[in-house]
Image 1 (tube, helix red, strand yellow):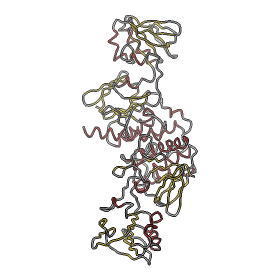
Image 2 (cartoon, chains in turn green, red):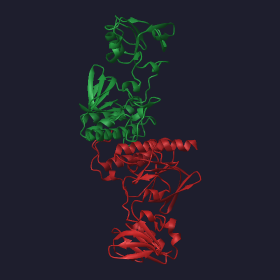
Image 3 (cartoon, rainbow over the protein chains, first blue to last red):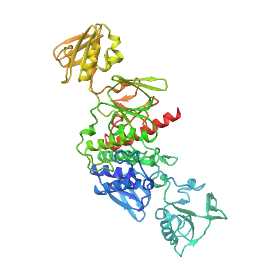
Length: 280
Length: 280
């Protein structure tokens, strides 16, 4: 079992990983292959102490190299769900499973824009994980709303389970031939006695289940019971969330969205996680 | 009036100064000439992201140069007292007076070790500022307990006011000829009807007032009403103390004592101070 699983590869996540290693802990950073930290796109950062007038990309590269040099492991992929287990947590990461004693969210500020009605249906007809929830829709009618290839792959798996599957591409991407595609823009979701009604810009259709695949997941979906407000994770000064063993750092804990703040919080989260593990 | 007066020149103070400048604010860093940050004495820091395997002195130098390059002013001296005034605060800094809209404490972790009985007598016979309190002891009997040259200078000023002055050197330093020196080790302070009893390793003597000059001051003494616990300044996640316009960052806000944490908190304190000033 890994000591610390860090979700995100921006300044908070890498700072957390670096200090975890210094404290002698195993740390795995889980993030998409393409670094989605906004820092990668920052033209110039002038107020990160020690590295003046640096591009965001160079800053991130320095952090990544330092982390790699200290033995931080990276697992490329999106975390689909986190489940509590004996002595820690189980993370479903696309086709991998990671077990970790502690979790640190450093998932950044981006909050996925949900469809009207979506939030109320989470776990009640709307799902973000085919592996987790596919079984509930065996021989049922499924809609898949997907931004990317990843969603198309999940749709193919669901197709093998479902009675009927309709694929709504939300952004341009490669779509397998065997999927039945509807090129309409979804606008809202609602529950009726007959199932989940998906309204698009031109029609209304009813499904038993709707799977949505975006780059970001609503945080509360990843880990049941995680306290958030307006998409920001609640933490105390030690970067502890409301769930023991779960920490958060960086933009996902709120403003200001700054490299130095993210780096500092990542550092504190690592030390708090180390103390949590030590106490057993 | 300066926008932000920053007390301390370690990583938290310099990070705060750098971000203050980036936000277009005037920032003055007030600190002793000799940098007393523990970072200056750290042999090697491995977990400050971006600058790997750096000596503390080099890290501090990089921070200082960056701050200076951004137009951060430095005022060398010890802050003796902070008084609220219209639209901000007045800081007594040895022989200078600084007016600032906001204050950021980045005074580090060192907590002066007080004598038994000292805390209860603060403002009631025990003082840390000749300029502030000297007037109350005109033609009275004064003891000066001093670690350094600075205390000797203050004692000379008090000598011109007092009826009688005894100088107790606490550490080796240059002592002016005109001071009456007692080379005994103070052990405790207490109030009796006759005045303040100073007990040393060999005698007990009674004074009207006792002035103590150390490198560090009890924080609550610097600014009346500042909420502290065990010498740690109470702050929220925005680095606000209990006093509007007063912020704190770095080791003085508690553990972990880490460069990255201090830098991050300094950054957040600067942004919170900027918002406070903007709201007017």
